[in-house]
Structures are given as C-alpha cells and as structure tokens.
Amino acid sequence: MSEISGSLNLLQELHNCRICPRECGADRFSARLGWCNAGAGFNISSICAHQGEEPAISGKQGICNIFFSRCNLACIYCQNWQISSRKEPAAGLGMEFSEVIGRIVDLLDGGCHAVGFVSPSHHVPQVKAIIEAVRESGRNPVFVYNTNGYDKAETLKSLETYIDIYLPDFKYMDASLAKEYSEADDYPEVALSALKEMYRQKGSVLLCNHDGYAEKGIILRHLILPGHTDNSIAVLRKIAGDVSSSLTISLMAQYWPVPQVASHRQLGRPITPEEYERVTSELQALGFYKGWIQELDSQNNYLPDFNQQHPFGKAVGDGDSED
Image 1 (cartoon, rainbow, N blue to C red):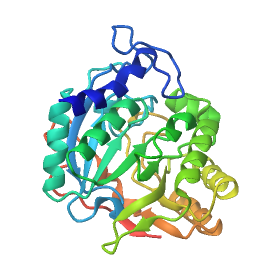
Image 2 (cartoon, rainbow, N blue to C red):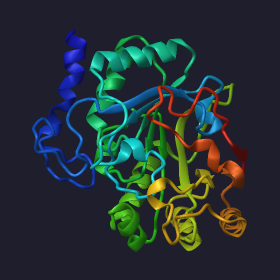
Image 3 (cartoon, rainbow, N blue to C red):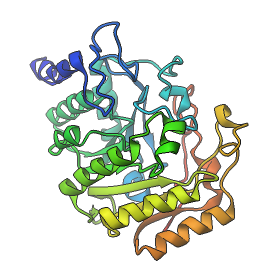
C-alpha cells in the first residue's frame, strides 16, 4: 500500500495544473476543471493489446496501450473522437489505480513487451504513477509516450528517466490550420520545441533488440490531411532542417473522415493518390531514410470503436510498408 501511496503523491501537481501548454492552472481535484475537462483520477477509456502501431512498436503480441480520455487538443477530425472530446461524454469508464495496474500486469504477463500511453500530455502525473507501480511489480517493459506533439518541453524533461520511446505526432507547420482544426495556433512552435527536447534525450537512433522491437528512441509520425499537402511538406522540411533527417519517420496515409467532418469542404474525403505521391516524394527528396510509409489503401484499418471491449478488434494488421 505504501508503494501505491508514494506513486499517487505524484498527482498533487494537478491542484494547480500547468503540465501541458495550455497552462490553465486548474485544480483538477475540484469541480473547477481546466481546458481539457479531465479530473485528477485515472481517466482511462481502454487498456488493451494493440497490434496497429508501427511494427517495431507492436511486435507479434501487440503493445499494452493505455488510452486516456479527453485531450489537450481539439482536432475536429480525430479518429478517437469517442473518447477525446473535452465536451461530450467519453466512451469507456474511469478506473481505479489498482485496476489499471492489474490490467497492465496481466497483459505484460500475457506476452506484451511494451506499455504505451496514448494521449498522455494532460495526464503526465498519472503516467509517472503507473510507470513507478509497474516497475515496483517487478516488470520492466519498454514505456512508449504516444502523443499528439502538443507537449511542454519542461514537462518532457521530467519524463527522461521514465520514457524509453517517444512516439509523437507533428501535425502542423501552418498556424492557421492548427487554430482552425485543433484550437492551438501555437502548435508549430510548441511541437518543434517538444521534439527538440525528445531529440536531446534520445537522439536520432532507434535502438532495437534482436527481435526487431524498439527499446529506445523516437518515431515521429505525420498524418497527411486531404487538401493540405503544403502543410505536410512544410512539416517535413522543418524537421529535416531544424532537427534531423536521420529521425525515424512514420508517414501516415490512414486519414478517413469521421462523422463530425463527413461534409467538411476539405476534410470530408480521404487523401488522393496525387497528394500521397507529392508528400512521399518530398520525404525521399529530403533524405529521410528510416521508418515506414503507410499504404494508400490503409484508411479502413485504423478505425476504432471505443464502445467495444477491444476498440480495434482482435486482429488488426499493421498496414505499413518499410520506407
């Protein structure tokens, strides 16, 4: 019990929450919740073995993914919309800390080699508490921080001894798009600062074991949005110019319009072959040589349903091809 109490002490900074770039200062132990509308508990909608990440992350048995509810962005096209909205009820139920650790341990003992935290930017104290408790249980999996990229560099510094692999998005270099689609016009500079801190910690080499499973490093994701190839190219150029073209890149073509944007003038369709070709060609021209490029027909492989016990079904193909 003392070990659990010690881990939960990490949550005290949520009394004046400034862990994400919103810095709203909310007391998340009270009814006065902040921008993300998440409390101080373990706001988790699902814990499951997920095989839909990059091959070096998923492995054969899948990664034990922890899907936090709410989000510190408001992406109108989010595929996890059932749990990410800060205004609508989230699918799934919050869990007690002991239940969270029990489920993780069961999945690790069942063959998962890694634990992933999905949408963790507004739940960093909970992430630390979970990691400490899992380590106290005698397990030492790889811990993966699967983030939208909207993170404070200062907060990431505090994770250096906790996180093995950073799996960030880099969504926008166009501030107007970031504002219109995600309510975060400062996203480009915030995400770049966050990526530079991740790079300081992990460098550009993705270290893998003899089975090909990643154990330390960064995998940077970018999702191509329909009608916005200029933004994608600007993102890739910024990464190559300001960070490194030696980073492992996961270029995603999986965009599919969720119901909220089905009639949107630009977001209401998948990307076209021409858009796909333009961005993949730029990736290669910039000298990126490590990672994965999703196949153009991968859109239907990544649509979760968080009203189900396993949001992604029992068998999910990775849909990726090596770059």
